[in-house]
Image 1 (cartoon, one colour):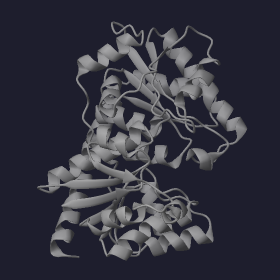
Image 2 (cartoon, rainbow, N blue to C red; image 1 turned 90 degrees about the horizontal axis):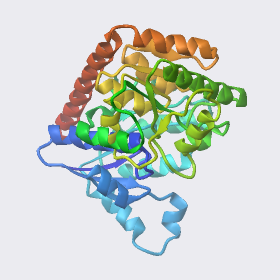
Image 3 (cartoon, rainbow, N blue to C red; image 1 turned 45 degrees about the vertical axis):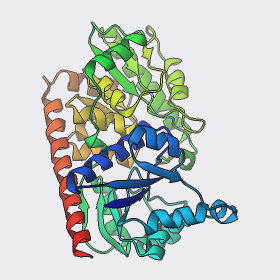
Image 4 (cartoon, rainbow, N blue to C red; image 1 turned 180 degrees about the vertical axis):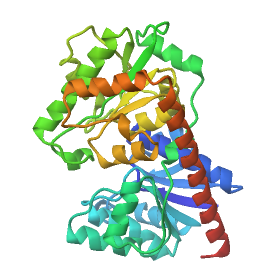
Length: 388
């Protein structure tokens, strides 16, 4: 069975998007006897090496038609040669980029390839153009599932017809590297692994939310979040924890290391440890598995930790964070952007002092999400076999 896959920030070096693609591959391999995947990627070589799938260069409509080479025929062949086209996560549906989205959603229609939206994330759609185009683009989808309830509710509000399932994030099927590898990486970063460890995974935040793919934030809110994270880091250090900052994305647009340095400059205590090397998704998962607590702004830092039963605390700055934490049964583990730094520390202390209860809750919830994802993949298999 051959699949054409697009919709995530594949090839960007983002640990979360790579994890989604790896997890999607593992899900499909469980359900179908033989699987071949071709992904649209901004860096096909990276995607092939890290995710273990085929990849071609992701291009926009203008660039594709202006080029005088075989790019357009390569695109067409990727869709025409597929048994199904899968639109997957992160968050492929948001209220801008409608031309590019329509262009790529149009290829399955042109090539008459079945279209499936599999565990997608959806941002708030407020424009008339956005609402009408998304309704039209999803009209021909054979199956639609979202990774959280807010995404499902937004599609329902937009008038997308048919059954929309809430499943989960395919990154839950990522497998960790060996624990010894994680401990080695931590040691190489100067972490004292004999002490209890906690991890903080920020993400680059900006008032230019479209450029950085998060919900709108004011300058005051960006500053408040950074001060809150710095306060949590200082508090954990004062409790005797090793505090490890782990970037999930490195790049010219979204550089988590730049965000980490901004946060560290606001701290008052001793310096935390920073993992500056490039990790594979499975290595990052294994590193977080060594922690007593993960404080995350990157969605997949929360997903990684929760999948291993490591207690998590998040910040409610984006609907996808809230969506995952609610689905995981951990809504009370969210810090509010408008909250005082002291209230963030209180949330952290509550989770640390609960005797592992929250870790067990989120681990069980992640198991339920995996089951729903596999069930949805089974439905897709049955539909494709039946020729629908």
